[in-house]
Image (cartoon, rainbow, N blue to C red; front, side):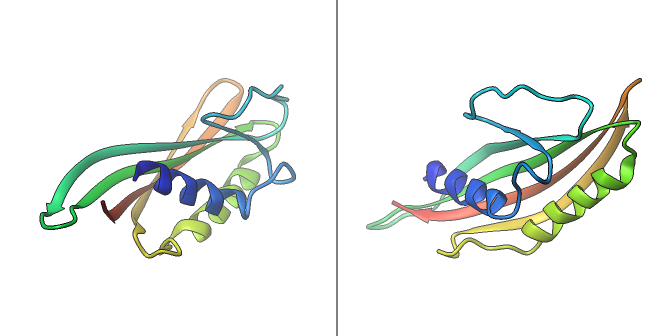
Length: 133
């Protein structure tokens, strides 16, 4: 069940993001040599709580989770690039449902932090899926 959700979320992300947008790190991807002078993104998909919501001949489970894009931008590049990537991610996932209609997005939040050398912009969506075994 979780694997179907992870596959759908990754496929949606990589349908729009590629190396021309920014360097992208994600779980399970081989390590890449980052050029820290350029913007880079880290995609994190976190399955959360799962609960049984329907009992019968087949059981239906509600799976909750988070998908986060953390965008790291060197201060010399400026925040505009980060906000462009943030908007692209937001437009990609806002109100989205998977093709099988089991997975949907539920709201988002943003944070901006700063280090001595970089800005870090994070956008996070809550997601849920209903899958029957």
